[in-house]
Length: 332
Image 1: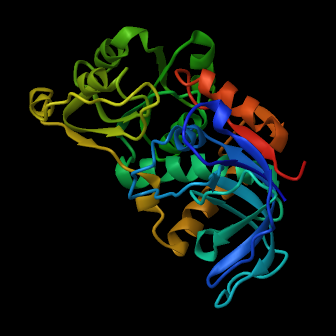
Image 2: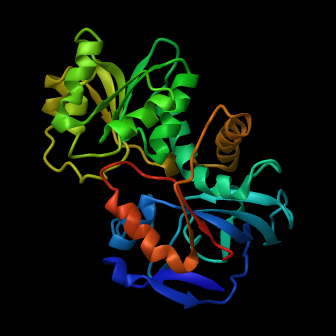
Image 3: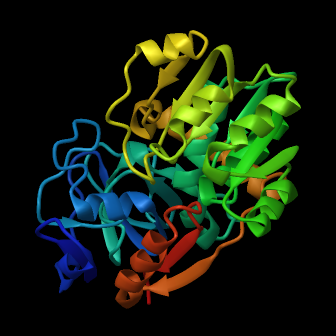
Protein backbone atom coordinates (compact mmCIF):
# COMPACT_ATOMS: atom_id res chain seq x y z
CA UNK A 1 0.00 0.00 0.00
CA UNK A 2 1.03 3.63 -0.45
CA UNK A 3 1.87 5.65 2.66
CA UNK A 4 3.54 8.92 3.65
CA UNK A 5 6.05 8.46 6.48
CA UNK A 6 8.79 10.28 8.36
CA UNK A 7 11.80 8.69 10.05
CA UNK A 8 13.22 11.98 11.37
CA UNK A 9 11.81 15.35 12.36
CA UNK A 10 12.21 18.49 10.31
CA UNK A 11 10.83 20.43 7.38
CA UNK A 12 8.90 19.27 4.34
CA UNK A 13 11.99 17.45 3.04
CA UNK A 14 11.61 14.69 5.66
CA UNK A 15 8.38 13.38 4.09
CA UNK A 16 8.88 9.99 2.47
CA UNK A 17 6.54 8.26 0.01
CA UNK A 18 6.71 4.52 0.66
CA UNK A 19 5.21 1.15 -0.31
CA UNK A 20 4.33 -0.80 2.83
CA UNK A 21 2.60 -4.09 3.56
CA UNK A 22 -1.09 -3.84 4.39
CA UNK A 23 -1.20 -4.02 8.21
CA UNK A 24 -2.97 -6.81 10.08
CA UNK A 25 -5.34 -5.93 12.93
CA UNK A 26 -4.41 -7.29 16.34
CA UNK A 27 -6.48 -7.79 19.45
CA UNK A 28 -9.03 -4.96 19.79
CA UNK A 29 -8.17 -3.39 16.42
CA UNK A 30 -9.85 -2.99 13.04
CA UNK A 31 -8.36 -2.61 9.59
CA UNK A 32 -9.89 0.28 7.66
CA UNK A 33 -9.61 0.73 3.92
CA UNK A 34 -9.31 4.48 3.83
CA UNK A 35 -11.22 6.41 1.22
CA UNK A 36 -10.42 9.87 2.63
CA UNK A 37 -8.25 11.48 5.28
CA UNK A 38 -8.38 14.87 6.92
CA UNK A 39 -5.32 17.13 6.68
CA UNK A 40 -4.61 19.06 9.87
CA UNK A 41 -2.06 21.34 11.48
CA UNK A 42 -1.37 18.51 13.93
CA UNK A 43 0.26 16.68 11.00
CA UNK A 44 2.72 19.55 10.63
CA UNK A 45 3.44 19.54 14.37
CA UNK A 46 4.08 15.79 14.16
CA UNK A 47 6.53 16.31 11.30
CA UNK A 48 8.29 19.06 13.26
CA UNK A 49 8.71 16.85 16.33
CA UNK A 50 6.46 18.78 18.70
CA UNK A 51 5.03 15.49 20.02
CA UNK A 52 8.39 13.74 20.38
CA UNK A 53 8.19 13.94 24.19
CA UNK A 54 4.40 14.07 24.51
CA UNK A 55 2.64 11.82 27.00
CA UNK A 56 -0.76 12.69 25.53
CA UNK A 57 0.18 11.84 21.94
CA UNK A 58 3.19 9.47 22.27
CA UNK A 59 4.97 8.41 19.11
CA UNK A 60 8.03 6.59 17.82
CA UNK A 61 9.79 6.86 14.49
CA UNK A 62 9.28 5.89 11.75
CA UNK A 63 5.62 6.90 11.70
CA UNK A 64 2.95 7.21 9.03
CA UNK A 65 1.47 10.70 9.16
CA UNK A 66 -2.22 11.57 9.28
CA UNK A 67 -4.45 11.57 12.37
CA UNK A 68 -7.95 11.55 10.85
CA UNK A 69 -9.59 9.23 8.37
CA UNK A 70 -12.75 7.63 7.07
CA UNK A 71 -13.47 4.49 5.12
CA UNK A 72 -14.71 0.92 5.33
CA UNK A 73 -13.84 -1.83 7.79
CA UNK A 74 -12.20 -4.73 5.91
CA UNK A 75 -11.01 -6.89 8.84
CA UNK A 76 -11.25 -7.00 12.62
CA UNK A 77 -8.98 -8.43 15.28
CA UNK A 78 -9.82 -10.69 18.17
CA UNK A 79 -12.42 -9.49 20.72
CA UNK A 80 -13.90 -6.89 18.36
CA UNK A 81 -17.63 -7.56 18.48
CA UNK A 82 -19.26 -4.19 17.74
CA UNK A 83 -17.81 -3.79 14.24
CA UNK A 84 -18.11 -5.90 11.12
CA UNK A 85 -16.62 -5.97 7.66
CA UNK A 86 -18.32 -3.36 5.49
CA UNK A 87 -19.08 -0.86 8.24
CA UNK A 88 -18.56 2.79 7.29
CA UNK A 89 -16.43 4.46 9.98
CA UNK A 90 -14.39 7.55 10.78
CA UNK A 91 -11.84 8.39 13.47
CA UNK A 92 -9.29 10.90 14.66
CA UNK A 93 -6.10 11.16 16.79
CA UNK A 94 -4.87 7.76 15.69
CA UNK A 95 -1.81 8.12 13.46
CA UNK A 96 -1.48 6.49 10.06
CA UNK A 97 -4.23 7.94 7.86
CA UNK A 98 -1.95 9.20 5.09
CA UNK A 99 -2.11 5.72 3.61
CA UNK A 100 -4.49 3.42 1.79
CA UNK A 101 -5.13 1.25 4.85
CA UNK A 102 -4.85 1.88 8.59
CA UNK A 103 -5.12 -0.26 11.69
CA UNK A 104 -7.14 1.63 14.33
CA UNK A 105 -8.17 0.72 17.90
CA UNK A 106 -11.78 -0.37 17.44
CA UNK A 107 -13.04 1.80 20.29
CA UNK A 108 -11.85 4.91 18.44
CA UNK A 109 -14.04 4.27 15.40
CA UNK A 110 -17.35 6.11 15.03
CA UNK A 111 -20.07 4.83 12.67
CA UNK A 112 -20.78 7.12 9.74
CA UNK A 113 -24.44 7.36 8.66
CA UNK A 114 -25.15 6.02 5.19
CA UNK A 115 -26.43 9.45 4.13
CA UNK A 116 -23.19 11.25 5.06
CA UNK A 117 -20.37 11.22 2.48
CA UNK A 118 -17.17 9.68 3.83
CA UNK A 119 -15.29 12.68 2.47
CA UNK A 120 -17.26 14.96 4.76
CA UNK A 121 -16.77 12.65 7.75
CA UNK A 122 -13.01 12.63 7.13
CA UNK A 123 -12.95 16.41 6.90
CA UNK A 124 -14.92 17.08 10.08
CA UNK A 125 -14.26 14.43 12.71
CA UNK A 126 -11.14 16.01 14.23
CA UNK A 127 -12.44 19.57 13.92
CA UNK A 128 -15.96 18.64 14.94
CA UNK A 129 -15.06 16.62 18.03
CA UNK A 130 -12.67 19.39 19.08
CA UNK A 131 -15.34 22.07 18.74
CA UNK A 132 -17.83 19.83 20.53
CA UNK A 133 -15.80 19.28 23.69
CA UNK A 134 -14.70 22.92 23.78
CA UNK A 135 -18.25 24.25 23.59
CA UNK A 136 -19.97 21.66 25.77
CA UNK A 137 -17.41 20.48 28.32
CA UNK A 138 -14.76 23.17 28.68
CA UNK A 139 -16.66 26.37 27.88
CA UNK A 140 -19.98 25.00 29.18
CA UNK A 141 -21.79 27.44 26.97
CA UNK A 142 -25.51 28.02 27.32
CA UNK A 143 -28.27 30.62 26.97
CA UNK A 144 -27.03 34.05 27.98
CA UNK A 145 -23.33 33.16 27.96
CA UNK A 146 -20.78 35.05 25.88
CA UNK A 147 -17.65 33.83 24.15
CA UNK A 148 -14.88 34.94 21.84
CA UNK A 149 -13.65 32.58 19.11
CA UNK A 150 -10.28 33.27 17.52
CA UNK A 151 -9.51 32.07 13.98
CA UNK A 152 -13.25 31.91 13.45
CA UNK A 153 -12.99 31.32 9.72
CA UNK A 154 -10.86 28.21 10.18
CA UNK A 155 -12.06 24.63 10.34
CA UNK A 156 -12.46 24.37 14.10
CA UNK A 157 -13.43 28.02 14.44
CA UNK A 158 -16.39 27.81 12.07
CA UNK A 159 -17.79 24.75 13.83
CA UNK A 160 -17.18 26.29 17.24
CA UNK A 161 -19.09 29.43 16.26
CA UNK A 162 -22.02 27.33 15.04
CA UNK A 163 -22.09 25.10 18.13
CA UNK A 164 -21.86 28.10 20.45
CA UNK A 165 -24.82 29.74 18.74
CA UNK A 166 -26.83 26.51 18.89
CA UNK A 167 -26.25 26.47 22.66
CA UNK A 168 -27.60 30.00 23.01
CA UNK A 169 -24.37 31.96 23.43
CA UNK A 170 -23.56 35.41 22.10
CA UNK A 171 -20.49 34.92 19.90
CA UNK A 172 -17.65 37.33 19.18
CA UNK A 173 -15.20 36.27 16.48
CA UNK A 174 -11.78 37.36 15.27
CA UNK A 175 -10.18 36.89 11.88
CA UNK A 176 -7.27 38.35 9.96
CA UNK A 177 -9.18 39.91 7.07
CA UNK A 178 -12.56 41.46 6.35
CA UNK A 179 -13.30 38.63 3.93
CA UNK A 180 -12.76 36.04 6.64
CA UNK A 181 -14.82 38.10 9.08
CA UNK A 182 -17.69 37.78 6.61
CA UNK A 183 -17.28 33.99 6.76
CA UNK A 184 -17.53 34.10 10.56
CA UNK A 185 -20.69 36.21 10.37
CA UNK A 186 -22.17 33.80 7.83
CA UNK A 187 -21.60 30.99 10.33
CA UNK A 188 -23.53 32.91 12.97
CA UNK A 189 -21.07 35.16 14.80
CA UNK A 190 -22.86 38.14 16.32
CA UNK A 191 -19.75 40.34 16.09
CA UNK A 192 -16.67 39.72 13.94
CA UNK A 193 -13.57 41.92 14.19
CA UNK A 194 -9.97 41.80 13.03
CA UNK A 195 -7.05 40.95 15.33
CA UNK A 196 -5.30 44.28 14.61
CA UNK A 197 -2.43 43.84 17.04
CA UNK A 198 -4.65 43.01 20.00
CA UNK A 199 -7.22 45.75 19.46
CA UNK A 200 -9.87 43.05 19.20
CA UNK A 201 -9.94 43.16 23.01
CA UNK A 202 -10.95 46.82 22.93
CA UNK A 203 -13.78 46.01 20.52
CA UNK A 204 -15.03 43.22 22.79
CA UNK A 205 -14.87 45.44 25.87
CA UNK A 206 -16.72 48.23 24.06
CA UNK A 207 -19.46 45.82 22.97
CA UNK A 208 -19.87 44.38 26.49
CA UNK A 209 -19.87 47.69 28.38
CA UNK A 210 -16.37 47.00 29.67
CA UNK A 211 -17.24 43.63 31.15
CA UNK A 212 -15.62 41.20 28.70
CA UNK A 213 -16.78 37.73 27.66
CA UNK A 214 -17.29 34.65 29.80
CA UNK A 215 -15.02 32.42 27.71
CA UNK A 216 -12.27 32.98 25.14
CA UNK A 217 -11.29 30.14 22.80
CA UNK A 218 -7.71 30.92 21.73
CA UNK A 219 -6.00 28.63 19.22
CA UNK A 220 -3.24 31.07 18.30
CA UNK A 221 -1.11 31.41 21.43
CA UNK A 222 1.55 34.04 21.76
CA UNK A 223 0.06 36.50 19.25
CA UNK A 224 -3.26 36.79 21.09
CA UNK A 225 -3.21 35.22 24.55
CA UNK A 226 -2.55 38.28 26.69
CA UNK A 227 -5.14 40.33 24.83
CA UNK A 228 -7.51 37.37 25.16
CA UNK A 229 -7.08 37.73 28.91
CA UNK A 230 -7.86 41.43 28.57
CA UNK A 231 -11.10 40.58 26.73
CA UNK A 232 -12.28 38.16 29.46
CA UNK A 233 -14.59 39.13 32.31
CA UNK A 234 -13.55 38.83 35.95
CA UNK A 235 -13.31 35.18 37.00
CA UNK A 236 -13.78 34.23 33.35
CA UNK A 237 -12.14 31.41 31.43
CA UNK A 238 -9.38 31.57 28.81
CA UNK A 239 -9.07 28.35 26.80
CA UNK A 240 -5.74 28.08 24.97
CA UNK A 241 -6.25 25.01 22.81
CA UNK A 242 -3.57 25.72 20.21
CA UNK A 243 -0.35 27.60 19.58
CA UNK A 244 -0.37 28.22 15.84
CA UNK A 245 1.41 31.58 16.26
CA UNK A 246 3.87 30.17 18.84
CA UNK A 247 3.86 29.08 22.46
CA UNK A 248 3.66 31.51 25.39
CA UNK A 249 6.79 30.86 27.46
CA UNK A 250 6.89 33.78 29.85
CA UNK A 251 3.49 33.87 31.56
CA UNK A 252 3.59 34.58 35.29
CA UNK A 253 0.49 33.20 37.07
CA UNK A 254 0.13 36.54 38.86
CA UNK A 255 -0.96 38.00 35.52
CA UNK A 256 -4.15 35.94 35.78
CA UNK A 257 -4.91 37.58 39.09
CA UNK A 258 -4.19 41.05 37.80
CA UNK A 259 -6.45 40.42 34.81
CA UNK A 260 -9.43 39.65 37.04
CA UNK A 261 -8.77 36.33 38.79
CA UNK A 262 -9.01 34.48 35.49
CA UNK A 263 -8.96 30.75 34.88
CA UNK A 264 -6.55 29.56 32.17
CA UNK A 265 -6.64 26.04 30.77
CA UNK A 266 -4.76 24.23 28.02
CA UNK A 267 -6.94 21.20 27.14
CA UNK A 268 -6.22 18.44 24.66
CA UNK A 269 -8.73 16.48 22.62
CA UNK A 270 -7.39 13.09 23.72
CA UNK A 271 -8.43 13.73 27.32
CA UNK A 272 -11.99 14.35 26.16
CA UNK A 273 -12.18 11.20 23.99
CA UNK A 274 -11.25 8.65 26.61
CA UNK A 275 -13.72 5.92 25.69
CA UNK A 276 -15.79 4.63 22.80
CA UNK A 277 -19.20 5.83 24.03
CA UNK A 278 -17.90 9.40 24.37
CA UNK A 279 -16.41 9.34 20.88
CA UNK A 280 -19.59 7.96 19.33
CA UNK A 281 -21.76 10.46 21.21
CA UNK A 282 -19.75 13.45 20.07
CA UNK A 283 -19.43 12.16 16.51
CA UNK A 284 -23.16 11.44 16.29
CA UNK A 285 -23.92 15.03 17.30
CA UNK A 286 -21.59 16.43 14.64
CA UNK A 287 -22.73 14.07 11.88
CA UNK A 288 -26.39 14.78 12.68
CA UNK A 289 -25.75 18.52 12.45
CA UNK A 290 -24.07 18.07 9.07
CA UNK A 291 -26.96 15.98 7.79
CA UNK A 292 -29.67 18.42 8.86
CA UNK A 293 -27.73 21.48 7.74
CA UNK A 294 -27.49 22.84 11.28
CA UNK A 295 -23.71 22.63 10.82
CA UNK A 296 -22.11 23.77 7.60
CA UNK A 297 -18.57 23.07 6.42
CA UNK A 298 -16.87 23.96 3.15
CA UNK A 299 -14.01 21.72 2.05
CA UNK A 300 -11.25 24.10 1.03
CA UNK A 301 -8.99 21.71 -0.87
CA UNK A 302 -8.78 18.15 -2.15
CA UNK A 303 -5.51 16.28 -2.68
CA UNK A 304 -4.16 12.83 -3.50
CA UNK A 305 -1.52 10.93 -1.52
CA UNK A 306 1.15 12.09 -3.94
CA UNK A 307 0.15 15.69 -3.23
CA UNK A 308 0.54 15.50 0.58
CA UNK A 309 3.75 17.60 0.63
CA UNK A 310 2.00 20.38 -1.30
CA UNK A 311 -1.11 20.14 0.87
CA UNK A 312 0.87 20.46 4.09
CA UNK A 313 2.90 23.36 2.67
CA UNK A 314 -0.28 25.23 1.76
CA UNK A 315 -1.72 24.60 5.22
CA UNK A 316 1.48 25.76 6.91
CA UNK A 317 1.56 28.94 4.86
CA UNK A 318 -1.91 29.83 6.23
CA UNK A 319 -0.99 29.26 9.86
CA UNK A 320 -1.94 32.79 10.96
CA UNK A 321 -5.35 32.83 9.30
CA UNK A 322 -7.02 29.72 10.64
CA UNK A 323 -7.07 26.11 9.55
CA UNK A 324 -8.80 25.49 6.24
CA UNK A 325 -10.70 22.23 5.85
CA UNK A 326 -8.60 20.02 3.58
CA UNK A 327 -9.23 16.41 2.61
CA UNK A 328 -7.04 13.70 1.13
CA UNK A 329 -8.41 11.18 -1.34
CA UNK A 330 -6.60 8.20 0.16
CA UNK A 331 -7.75 5.87 -2.57
CA UNK A 332 -6.18 7.89 -5.39
